[in-house]
Length: 114
Ligand code: 5GP
Image 1 (cartoon, rainbow, N blue to C red):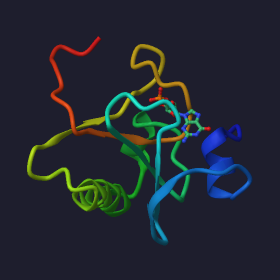
Image 2 (cartoon, helix red, strand yellow):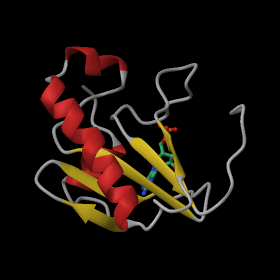
Image 3 (spheres, rainbow, N blue to C red):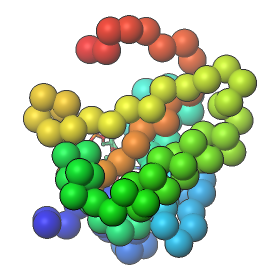
């Protein structure tokens, strides 16, 4: 797996505005926010993309999504709701090959996505 910008953030080699971390996940603000709250949650144990999750330990995968919900809650987004985005591969327009969940909140979203 090629090293990505998120590997460097986890290693502390480049700075990030970290909003939450524990032994399993790191959550930090997106450098190019698409909503008033835009946070990325990544597993500390690298998974390249959503496709790869089918080969992942289901307990670990479940824990990851529990943590995404926890981080959104800590960002006070539960009352009004929010959007979770997982871009996957070329058609999904994934630009960083390291699994990440976008948490987007504090604005009304629309549908369908672009
Ligand atoms: P993707 O398009 O792969 O779903 O999302 C990658 C996200 O990472 C983008 O929203 C982009 O703005 C964000 N991003 C790219 N480089 C950096 C960086 O160096 N720091 C932070 N905090 N976010 C980044």
